[in-house]
Image (cartoon, rainbow, N blue to C red):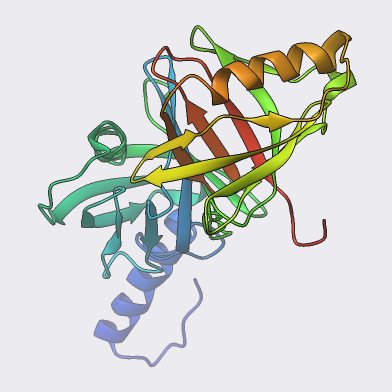
Length: 270
């Protein structure tokens, strides 16, 4: 570095040190020029130990622009803070800090997320996605888009997309896709199509339980995939109380024997 002849020796030394620091790694450690991780990221899923865990809507992390600030977020129930160091554009190091101590239902996800978001993590950045990877290959998949609010169980048109049997989900056959649709009104009146025949029934919601009364339906003879779908839905709706859960635009109904269905909420355009 060239310097003017008559500068004081102390100032020359300071300028030399500053230049060496700036050239060593592209910028001071802890800042984020071009890193792309700063901001709020909403967790979509975790992949670890051969399992994929879907994130609850509140799971998120806000990475600071500078290491002088702390990261904050939510593990899925409890909030947390953490120190973050940016190791160039391809990695970060997370040191967990404080966390709240509320009793939570989804402890499996919360424990897994807290266990993964620590230590040195490699960063894979896409326009609206961020993936953090641990040394053993586990991943945290995140997006910049906030999760859609859960659709209401009632007053929503639900289209059956898959049937669950023995713990395995199978998509509705192409010939029957979009044929089974049902709605539960606010007063409990359920109606729709079982895949071929239209039906109506009285439904009752008690907490996480949904029960259908006797089904009244039209009497068209139904063959092939539509008839098979109708028979399975008729048996499911008549099998007793079902456990229901809505995540985003997806409804899950599960019977006591493990059989069930998934259904998608109609969009506003539909």
